Image 1: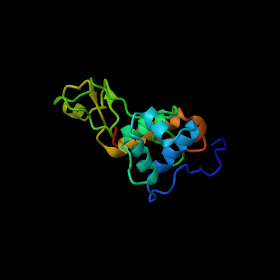
Image 2 (image 1 turned 60 degrees about the horizontal axis):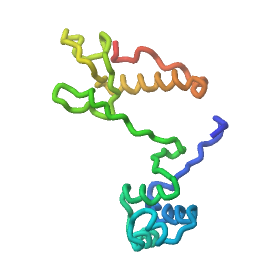
Image 3 (image 1 turned 45 degrees about the horizontal axis):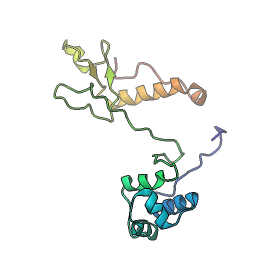
Image 4 (image 1 turned 30 degrees about the vertical axis):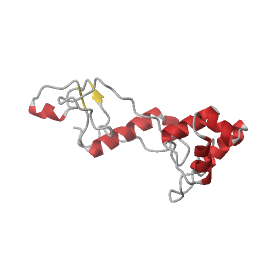
Length: 169
């Protein structure tokens, strides 16, 4: 989308339509100019599997679909309705809590927290090597501020988000 004032263009069908695995496999075959048997041979599956997928009698697993689309050099990606790619979160093996569990993935991990960034600071507890903000409003305010600062050109018309967010101080 080059013009920021233009209406966003949706790249997907409405959510109530079935997932188009059959159409994806047919598109792969067309791009590769292969028959079902040839595509099956290149993907390492039985030719009847390709036929069942294209006929809509079988929905392939993600692993199988990755093998099929890899024949033409394609990869699976998750995109939002505006075509922006959702990147997978990195798995930090060294950021585990005291019980050797990962922190909740929907929370932004704070590595080496400063004074006041951990809920236990008000009680004088020893600060851990990593933590996160439990208050959703604080997390959302921090994300809005971060997005505004990183993408100033896109958000220049919006007022600067307040800092520090309520609940942080």
